[in-house]
Image (cartoon, rainbow, N blue to C red; front, side, top):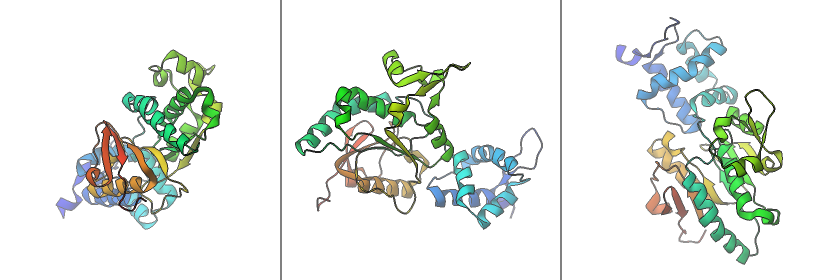
Length: 298
């Protein structure tokens, strides 16, 4: 049994017994995958343990073995939420992968709004599917503001922003960012969309009048059903597919297909690829794909 119980991770310099062995890693990573779709390879065991170790100490566990046993016995939504919060990477910044926002402003929005106007429709639906701490969703809101200008109020053009991490969503709701997070923004955008707070570290808050157009919701993309009443015109789901195995990617891509309007756009990370491109999507631009029309037109 030594091959199963062997240790992936040692406790570290403090000498504590917080070690993650093979069996507990497979149990825990399997539970994480079943709950969220996130696939964690064995060579990421050290990272998993290091991210969860503070949670174990916070919950007064003396070992991973006891923690994993309790999680398996009672995988409550609250406890799984704490685990996913630690596992998910919330690295983001404003206008990350700027090419996508330039495409949104100069190509996607002009084409989409022209079509909607021909249909006498002013309802524009954009979804930031893994919004993290809000930078992506608020970047989209800035692009909408710059594109529509004074015509913005003529459209229903807010942004739906979801994430699996409650911690990230709480930060997005506060919408306070470090000077480094906004340092690459043009001065005109920073002045228009942010207020500088009178605090020692000179943080910036995304202005409430723009923040109110971004709807924040917790959503597990791997859940059985997504409670949307209407399909989306554009979905940003960037740097998410990298966390899924092949089956998980196919599931998520199929879900995005079902949630997009005919000819709707799916935006993924610049380093990501689609498993179902030929069947469900056609390539438009680097990281941008258009939903293929289904044979029945649905």
